Length: 273
Image (cartoon, rainbow, N blue to C red):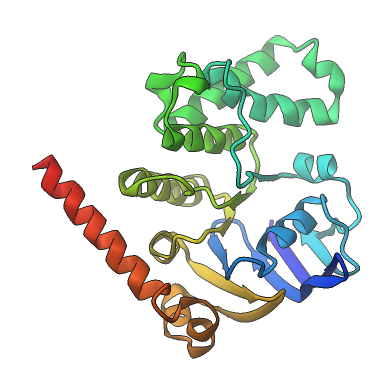
């Protein structure tokens, strides 16, 4: 059960090359980050890994199986799930109903009749999966609330719980901290770190919040203009001149972002006192 292994993946897009010979791995039991400036090719990589985009060259393997030509539903049944940059939830449904959709959708992908008729063991499995996912994401007290009444941060956690309820062994998370404040981001970081440490799943995280990335990831890949320019630990990435020049340097770089993050945390603590 080695997890994800992408080799020399090339994806053309609109006359350009969105991913140019990219190789990376996301083993189970590791929180792997994929970073880079806008337009670097991160979401394109997610599309190729999940089957939404067909690569022109290269291979995608999961658990030592070549799944490059597999459809999206087959990859999901194998254990690969993802979230998107924009939350896609049913606002009129309760939190628990939204979370249940994660496993129900995966079950239906294998046999659509399971959407209409489920056995008693399947219903028990669904209830347990929903309860576990909501507990992991600190949503149990909100189980009966409609999603439309929740804050942005709470909705992000619902989406994460829905993906977790699906029983996926590898989750691809696309900018899950977008729109969250510092306290919500900290809770999110603890949650995804717990999924890896306590449940042993693998996570491939695309994220622009560098303070979050550096604090939770075990290993990082950096893309720029569709090419992999660096791979290493967070400490090695922080120290890389190549990464700083492409992404982390300047006023918009890591130091400026972390300083702003620390100042905001300080203000939050002052208000609480």
